[in-house]
Image (cartoon, rainbow, N blue to C red; front, side, top):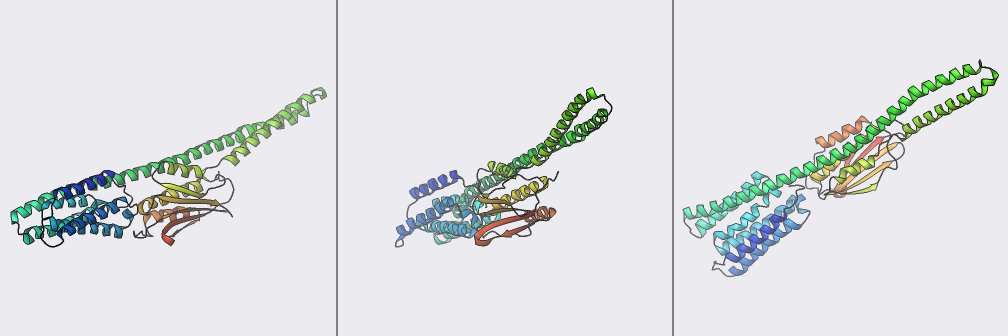
Length: 378
Protein backbone atom coordinates (compact mmCIF):
# COMPACT_ATOMS: atom_id res chain seq x y z
CA UNK A 1 0.00 0.00 0.00
CA UNK A 2 1.66 3.23 -1.18
CA UNK A 3 2.18 6.30 0.91
CA UNK A 4 0.46 4.99 4.01
CA UNK A 5 1.87 5.99 7.33
CA UNK A 6 2.97 3.19 9.62
CA UNK A 7 1.10 2.75 12.84
CA UNK A 8 3.44 3.01 15.81
CA UNK A 9 0.90 1.19 17.94
CA UNK A 10 1.08 -1.78 15.57
CA UNK A 11 4.86 -1.90 15.95
CA UNK A 12 4.70 -1.85 19.75
CA UNK A 13 1.86 -4.39 19.87
CA UNK A 14 3.76 -6.69 17.53
CA UNK A 15 6.88 -6.61 19.68
CA UNK A 16 4.88 -7.29 22.84
CA UNK A 17 3.00 -10.12 21.13
CA UNK A 18 6.23 -11.67 19.88
CA UNK A 19 7.73 -11.53 23.37
CA UNK A 20 4.60 -13.02 24.96
CA UNK A 21 4.53 -15.97 22.55
CA UNK A 22 8.18 -16.70 23.24
CA UNK A 23 7.54 -16.67 26.99
CA UNK A 24 4.45 -18.89 26.98
CA UNK A 25 5.54 -21.48 24.44
CA UNK A 26 8.01 -24.26 25.12
CA UNK A 27 10.15 -26.46 22.93
CA UNK A 28 8.29 -29.75 22.73
CA UNK A 29 9.85 -31.35 19.67
CA UNK A 30 12.20 -34.22 20.34
CA UNK A 31 14.39 -33.99 17.26
CA UNK A 32 18.01 -32.90 17.52
CA UNK A 33 18.71 -29.16 17.62
CA UNK A 34 15.00 -28.45 18.25
CA UNK A 35 15.83 -25.65 20.70
CA UNK A 36 18.16 -24.00 18.19
CA UNK A 37 15.48 -24.17 15.50
CA UNK A 38 12.92 -22.78 17.98
CA UNK A 39 14.91 -19.66 18.80
CA UNK A 40 16.06 -19.27 15.21
CA UNK A 41 12.38 -19.12 14.21
CA UNK A 42 11.69 -16.36 16.72
CA UNK A 43 14.77 -14.51 15.50
CA UNK A 44 13.68 -14.71 11.84
CA UNK A 45 10.17 -13.55 12.65
CA UNK A 46 11.46 -10.60 14.69
CA UNK A 47 13.97 -9.67 11.98
CA UNK A 48 11.34 -9.59 9.24
CA UNK A 49 8.87 -7.72 11.44
CA UNK A 50 11.31 -5.02 12.54
CA UNK A 51 12.74 -4.46 9.07
CA UNK A 52 9.36 -4.18 7.40
CA UNK A 53 8.09 -1.72 10.04
CA UNK A 54 11.13 0.53 10.34
CA UNK A 55 12.66 0.87 6.87
CA UNK A 56 11.10 3.86 5.11
CA UNK A 57 11.36 2.54 1.56
CA UNK A 58 9.80 -0.90 2.11
CA UNK A 59 6.23 0.35 1.64
CA UNK A 60 7.05 1.35 -1.93
CA UNK A 61 9.00 -1.79 -2.89
CA UNK A 62 6.53 -4.63 -3.19
CA UNK A 63 9.20 -7.24 -3.94
CA UNK A 64 11.24 -6.31 -0.88
CA UNK A 65 8.12 -6.22 1.34
CA UNK A 66 7.10 -9.67 0.10
CA UNK A 67 10.55 -10.97 0.98
CA UNK A 68 10.38 -9.66 4.53
CA UNK A 69 6.89 -11.09 4.95
CA UNK A 70 8.21 -14.46 3.72
CA UNK A 71 10.97 -14.25 6.35
CA UNK A 72 8.28 -13.84 9.02
CA UNK A 73 6.31 -16.82 7.70
CA UNK A 74 9.47 -18.96 7.69
CA UNK A 75 10.21 -17.96 11.26
CA UNK A 76 6.64 -18.74 12.27
CA UNK A 77 6.74 -22.26 10.85
CA UNK A 78 10.03 -22.98 12.62
CA UNK A 79 8.42 -21.91 15.89
CA UNK A 80 5.17 -23.78 15.20
CA UNK A 81 6.94 -27.03 14.32
CA UNK A 82 9.11 -26.99 17.43
CA UNK A 83 6.63 -25.74 20.05
CA UNK A 84 3.86 -28.04 18.73
CA UNK A 85 1.11 -25.91 20.26
CA UNK A 86 -1.48 -23.52 18.89
CA UNK A 87 0.00 -20.75 21.06
CA UNK A 88 2.45 -20.22 18.23
CA UNK A 89 -0.44 -19.19 15.98
CA UNK A 90 -0.54 -15.88 17.85
CA UNK A 91 2.38 -14.85 15.67
CA UNK A 92 0.03 -15.03 12.68
CA UNK A 93 -2.17 -12.37 14.31
CA UNK A 94 0.85 -10.05 14.23
CA UNK A 95 1.53 -11.12 10.65
CA UNK A 96 -2.10 -10.45 9.62
CA UNK A 97 -1.96 -6.92 11.01
CA UNK A 98 0.73 -6.04 8.47
CA UNK A 99 -0.83 -7.53 5.33
CA UNK A 100 -3.17 -4.62 4.43
CA UNK A 101 -0.15 -2.33 4.03
CA UNK A 102 1.18 -4.42 1.14
CA UNK A 103 -1.68 -6.46 -0.30
CA UNK A 104 -5.32 -6.18 -1.23
CA UNK A 105 -7.92 -7.62 1.11
CA UNK A 106 -8.47 -10.59 -1.20
CA UNK A 107 -4.76 -11.35 -1.40
CA UNK A 108 -4.42 -11.05 2.38
CA UNK A 109 -7.29 -13.46 3.02
CA UNK A 110 -5.91 -15.97 0.52
CA UNK A 111 -2.50 -15.80 2.21
CA UNK A 112 -3.95 -16.40 5.68
CA UNK A 113 -6.11 -19.30 4.49
CA UNK A 114 -3.13 -20.95 2.81
CA UNK A 115 -0.90 -20.63 5.89
CA UNK A 116 -3.62 -21.83 8.25
CA UNK A 117 -4.34 -24.74 5.90
CA UNK A 118 -0.73 -25.87 6.23
CA UNK A 119 -0.95 -25.45 10.01
CA UNK A 120 -4.09 -27.58 10.09
CA UNK A 121 -2.33 -30.39 8.19
CA UNK A 122 0.64 -30.24 10.57
CA UNK A 123 -1.58 -30.16 13.65
CA UNK A 124 -3.94 -32.91 12.52
CA UNK A 125 -1.79 -35.27 10.48
CA UNK A 126 1.78 -34.83 11.68
CA UNK A 127 0.98 -34.53 15.38
CA UNK A 128 -2.09 -36.77 15.15
CA UNK A 129 -4.51 -34.42 16.88
CA UNK A 130 -8.20 -35.10 16.49
CA UNK A 131 -10.13 -33.55 13.60
CA UNK A 132 -12.50 -31.58 15.80
CA UNK A 133 -9.79 -30.13 18.13
CA UNK A 134 -7.69 -29.27 15.10
CA UNK A 135 -10.51 -27.44 13.35
CA UNK A 136 -11.50 -25.56 16.50
CA UNK A 137 -7.92 -24.50 17.24
CA UNK A 138 -7.20 -23.32 13.71
CA UNK A 139 -10.61 -21.67 13.23
CA UNK A 140 -10.37 -19.78 16.52
CA UNK A 141 -6.95 -18.40 15.71
CA UNK A 142 -8.02 -17.62 12.15
CA UNK A 143 -10.85 -15.53 13.59
CA UNK A 144 -8.36 -13.46 15.59
CA UNK A 145 -6.21 -13.08 12.49
CA UNK A 146 -9.18 -11.87 10.44
CA UNK A 147 -10.00 -9.36 13.16
CA UNK A 148 -6.44 -8.01 13.09
CA UNK A 149 -6.62 -7.91 9.30
CA UNK A 150 -9.87 -5.94 9.35
CA UNK A 151 -8.59 -3.43 11.90
CA UNK A 152 -5.39 -2.86 9.95
CA UNK A 153 -7.38 -2.51 6.73
CA UNK A 154 -9.51 0.22 8.32
CA UNK A 155 -6.34 1.98 9.53
CA UNK A 156 -4.89 1.89 6.01
CA UNK A 157 -8.09 3.29 4.48
CA UNK A 158 -8.23 6.02 7.11
CA UNK A 159 -4.61 6.96 6.48
CA UNK A 160 -5.19 7.15 2.73
CA UNK A 161 -8.34 9.19 3.22
CA UNK A 162 -6.50 11.59 5.54
CA UNK A 163 -3.71 11.99 3.01
CA UNK A 164 -6.21 12.64 0.23
CA UNK A 165 -8.02 15.20 2.40
CA UNK A 166 -4.77 16.99 3.23
CA UNK A 167 -3.85 17.08 -0.43
CA UNK A 168 -7.27 18.39 -1.45
CA UNK A 169 -7.07 21.06 1.26
CA UNK A 170 -3.58 22.05 0.12
CA UNK A 171 -4.75 22.38 -3.48
CA UNK A 172 -7.73 24.43 -2.31
CA UNK A 173 -5.51 26.80 -0.32
CA UNK A 174 -3.05 27.28 -3.18
CA UNK A 175 -5.94 27.90 -5.58
CA UNK A 176 -7.44 30.38 -3.12
CA UNK A 177 -4.12 32.21 -2.96
CA UNK A 178 -4.09 32.51 -6.74
CA UNK A 179 -7.75 33.58 -6.83
CA UNK A 180 -7.13 36.26 -4.20
CA UNK A 181 -4.32 37.65 -6.30
CA UNK A 182 -6.48 37.45 -9.43
CA UNK A 183 -9.33 39.24 -7.65
CA UNK A 184 -7.03 42.04 -6.48
CA UNK A 185 -5.59 42.33 -9.97
CA UNK A 186 -9.06 42.52 -11.55
CA UNK A 187 -10.14 45.19 -9.08
CA UNK A 188 -7.06 47.29 -9.79
CA UNK A 189 -7.50 46.93 -13.54
CA UNK A 190 -11.18 47.85 -13.28
CA UNK A 191 -10.32 50.90 -11.19
CA UNK A 192 -7.70 51.89 -13.75
CA UNK A 193 -10.21 51.59 -16.58
CA UNK A 194 -12.76 53.65 -14.66
CA UNK A 195 -10.22 56.38 -13.94
CA UNK A 196 -9.16 56.42 -17.56
CA UNK A 197 -12.64 56.28 -19.04
CA UNK A 198 -14.41 58.68 -16.68
CA UNK A 199 -11.92 61.11 -15.18
CA UNK A 200 -9.54 61.03 -18.13
CA UNK A 201 -12.21 61.83 -20.69
CA UNK A 202 -13.80 64.50 -18.52
CA UNK A 203 -10.46 66.22 -17.90
CA UNK A 204 -9.67 66.10 -21.60
CA UNK A 205 -13.00 67.79 -22.33
CA UNK A 206 -12.24 70.35 -19.60
CA UNK A 207 -8.89 71.18 -21.19
CA UNK A 208 -10.55 71.69 -24.57
CA UNK A 209 -13.11 74.04 -23.02
CA UNK A 210 -10.38 75.96 -21.21
CA UNK A 211 -8.43 76.26 -24.44
CA UNK A 212 -11.50 77.73 -26.12
CA UNK A 213 -12.13 79.97 -23.11
CA UNK A 214 -8.57 81.32 -23.20
CA UNK A 215 -9.28 82.77 -26.64
CA UNK A 216 -12.40 84.62 -25.55
CA UNK A 217 -11.63 86.03 -22.09
CA UNK A 218 -10.15 89.51 -21.61
CA UNK A 219 -6.35 89.82 -21.34
CA UNK A 220 -6.51 90.49 -17.61
CA UNK A 221 -8.14 87.05 -17.10
CA UNK A 222 -5.68 85.07 -19.24
CA UNK A 223 -3.36 84.28 -16.31
CA UNK A 224 -6.14 82.62 -14.28
CA UNK A 225 -7.19 80.55 -17.27
CA UNK A 226 -3.60 79.39 -17.85
CA UNK A 227 -3.24 78.37 -14.22
CA UNK A 228 -6.51 76.42 -14.39
CA UNK A 229 -5.34 74.70 -17.58
CA UNK A 230 -2.05 73.78 -15.91
CA UNK A 231 -3.87 72.27 -12.92
CA UNK A 232 -6.19 70.27 -15.17
CA UNK A 233 -3.28 69.10 -17.37
CA UNK A 234 -1.27 68.07 -14.29
CA UNK A 235 -4.24 66.17 -12.85
CA UNK A 236 -4.75 64.36 -16.17
CA UNK A 237 -1.08 63.40 -16.24
CA UNK A 238 -1.25 62.05 -12.69
CA UNK A 239 -4.32 59.96 -13.51
CA UNK A 240 -2.59 58.52 -16.57
CA UNK A 241 0.45 57.70 -14.44
CA UNK A 242 -1.71 55.89 -11.87
CA UNK A 243 -3.48 53.91 -14.62
CA UNK A 244 -0.17 52.95 -16.22
CA UNK A 245 1.37 51.94 -12.88
CA UNK A 246 -1.65 49.79 -11.96
CA UNK A 247 -1.44 47.95 -15.27
CA UNK A 248 2.28 47.39 -14.88
CA UNK A 249 1.98 46.09 -11.31
CA UNK A 250 -1.14 43.97 -11.92
CA UNK A 251 0.59 40.59 -11.74
CA UNK A 252 0.37 37.17 -10.05
CA UNK A 253 2.93 35.73 -7.65
CA UNK A 254 3.07 32.05 -8.66
CA UNK A 255 5.82 31.40 -6.12
CA UNK A 256 3.48 32.34 -3.26
CA UNK A 257 0.67 30.12 -4.59
CA UNK A 258 2.99 27.09 -4.78
CA UNK A 259 4.34 27.87 -1.31
CA UNK A 260 0.77 27.82 -0.03
CA UNK A 261 0.33 24.35 -1.55
CA UNK A 262 3.19 22.86 0.45
CA UNK A 263 2.41 24.78 3.64
CA UNK A 264 -0.68 22.57 3.97
CA UNK A 265 1.20 19.36 3.15
CA UNK A 266 3.46 19.13 6.22
CA UNK A 267 4.49 15.55 5.46
CA UNK A 268 6.02 16.62 2.13
CA UNK A 269 9.54 18.05 1.94
CA UNK A 270 9.62 20.60 -0.90
CA UNK A 271 12.93 21.90 -2.25
CA UNK A 272 13.05 24.84 -4.67
CA UNK A 273 16.02 24.84 -7.02
CA UNK A 274 14.91 28.12 -8.57
CA UNK A 275 11.95 30.51 -8.49
CA UNK A 276 10.48 33.06 -10.85
CA UNK A 277 12.33 36.33 -10.54
CA UNK A 278 9.15 38.36 -10.92
CA UNK A 279 5.37 37.80 -10.92
CA UNK A 280 3.44 36.87 -14.05
CA UNK A 281 1.11 39.22 -15.89
CA UNK A 282 -1.07 36.40 -17.23
CA UNK A 283 -3.76 34.83 -15.08
CA UNK A 284 -4.07 31.94 -17.49
CA UNK A 285 -0.36 31.07 -17.47
CA UNK A 286 -0.23 31.17 -13.67
CA UNK A 287 -3.34 29.01 -13.31
CA UNK A 288 -2.12 26.39 -15.81
CA UNK A 289 1.25 26.09 -14.09
CA UNK A 290 -0.36 25.83 -10.66
CA UNK A 291 -2.82 23.14 -11.80
CA UNK A 292 -0.05 21.10 -13.41
CA UNK A 293 2.01 21.47 -10.23
CA UNK A 294 -0.91 20.19 -8.15
CA UNK A 295 -1.33 17.18 -10.45
CA UNK A 296 2.40 16.43 -10.38
CA UNK A 297 2.46 16.60 -6.58
CA UNK A 298 -0.53 14.25 -6.47
CA UNK A 299 1.33 11.73 -8.64
CA UNK A 300 4.43 12.10 -6.48
CA UNK A 301 2.47 11.31 -3.32
CA UNK A 302 0.78 8.36 -5.01
CA UNK A 303 3.78 6.75 -6.71
CA UNK A 304 6.92 8.33 -5.26
CA UNK A 305 9.30 6.32 -3.08
CA UNK A 306 9.94 9.35 -0.85
CA UNK A 307 7.88 12.38 0.10
CA UNK A 308 10.54 14.72 -1.24
CA UNK A 309 9.77 16.96 -4.21
CA UNK A 310 12.16 19.28 -6.05
CA UNK A 311 10.71 22.22 -8.01
CA UNK A 312 12.40 24.58 -10.45
CA UNK A 313 10.66 27.61 -12.03
CA UNK A 314 12.37 29.61 -14.76
CA UNK A 315 11.50 32.38 -17.20
CA UNK A 316 13.85 32.99 -20.11
CA UNK A 317 13.82 33.54 -23.87
CA UNK A 318 10.05 34.18 -24.00
CA UNK A 319 9.43 30.87 -22.30
CA UNK A 320 8.23 29.61 -18.92
CA UNK A 321 9.60 26.31 -17.64
CA UNK A 322 8.55 24.36 -14.57
CA UNK A 323 10.28 21.13 -13.55
CA UNK A 324 8.99 18.90 -10.74
CA UNK A 325 11.03 15.86 -9.70
CA UNK A 326 10.71 13.21 -7.00
CA UNK A 327 12.36 9.83 -6.25
CA UNK A 328 10.62 6.94 -7.91
CA UNK A 329 11.22 3.30 -6.99
CA UNK A 330 10.41 2.05 -10.47
CA UNK A 331 8.47 -0.95 -9.15
CA UNK A 332 5.04 0.65 -9.53
CA UNK A 333 3.69 0.80 -13.06
CA UNK A 334 2.47 4.28 -13.94
CA UNK A 335 0.53 4.49 -17.17
CA UNK A 336 1.75 7.27 -19.49
CA UNK A 337 -1.82 7.50 -20.72
CA UNK A 338 -3.30 8.05 -17.28
CA UNK A 339 -5.90 10.74 -16.71
CA UNK A 340 -3.56 12.83 -14.55
CA UNK A 341 -0.83 13.01 -17.17
CA UNK A 342 -3.42 13.59 -19.89
CA UNK A 343 -4.80 16.56 -17.93
CA UNK A 344 -1.32 18.06 -17.73
CA UNK A 345 -0.86 17.72 -21.49
CA UNK A 346 -4.26 19.26 -22.21
CA UNK A 347 -3.67 22.24 -19.91
CA UNK A 348 -0.28 22.95 -21.46
CA UNK A 349 -1.68 22.59 -24.98
CA UNK A 350 -4.20 25.37 -24.25
CA UNK A 351 -1.26 27.79 -24.20
CA UNK A 352 0.64 26.05 -27.03
CA UNK A 353 3.01 24.43 -24.54
CA UNK A 354 3.95 20.83 -23.86
CA UNK A 355 4.73 18.44 -21.00
CA UNK A 356 7.49 15.83 -20.97
CA UNK A 357 7.88 12.92 -18.54
CA UNK A 358 11.16 11.28 -17.58
CA UNK A 359 11.98 8.38 -15.21
CA UNK A 360 15.75 8.44 -15.62
CA UNK A 361 17.90 7.34 -12.66
CA UNK A 362 14.75 6.43 -10.67
CA UNK A 363 13.70 10.09 -10.60
CA UNK A 364 10.21 10.87 -11.85
CA UNK A 365 10.45 14.26 -13.58
CA UNK A 366 7.64 16.36 -15.07
CA UNK A 367 8.80 19.27 -17.23
CA UNK A 368 6.34 21.90 -18.45
CA UNK A 369 7.25 24.43 -21.13
CA UNK A 370 4.97 27.34 -22.06
CA UNK A 371 5.60 30.20 -24.51
CA UNK A 372 5.35 33.51 -22.68
CA UNK A 373 6.12 37.10 -23.57
CA UNK A 374 6.52 39.91 -21.05
CA UNK A 375 3.34 41.80 -21.80
CA UNK A 376 0.09 42.62 -20.06
CA UNK A 377 -2.68 40.10 -20.64
CA UNK A 378 -5.48 42.21 -19.17
